[in-house]
Image (tube, rainbow, N blue to C red; front, side, top):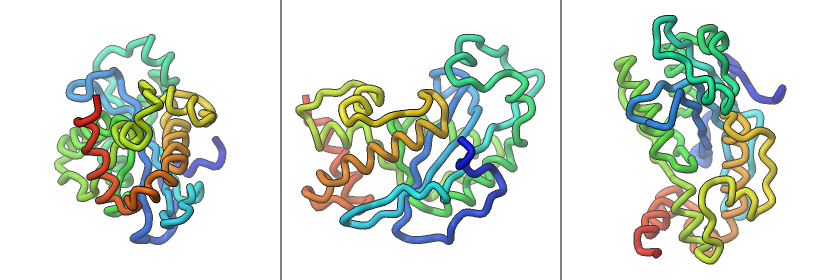
Length: 213
């Protein structure tokens, strides 16, 4: 993914119409206990009629893992492709999380199964004695279900299949963030119909998921 901007590349100027789609990779599936390995994010520049993914407004970082950290899970490494050497050669965690916070710059954050990403990021912020991000979080999982209840998709893969969205490599933070951003764009016409093209309205709409069987 040569177009993906690495840590230290300057992004575009702050814009109130900017949303940030984020994806993380972790050492396991338990967000409360496993380690944050990588963060990737891409900006979506929101226009009520036609939002656009901005590849020039992107971010990726692999966090350095301690030599004496938890044992590396071979199956998990096969899934996300971040090997033990790459983990040890990553960016120092404080610098990585500070860079991510600066990249977000208060923009709303969008993710699929957002609680997982949010928990891992907030744990890392707390570990580095940083305050939680001020950003609001929008979860596309319940939002998609509310907007298209007839689809009955289970998980990101089924939503991508439904819309014919190609993901270059699943369980790669960059590729998953981009695919999630494409999913947001595919949902946008329905958001427009519901007059929910602000982040607050979209969050409120997603909250209706609990009423859908």
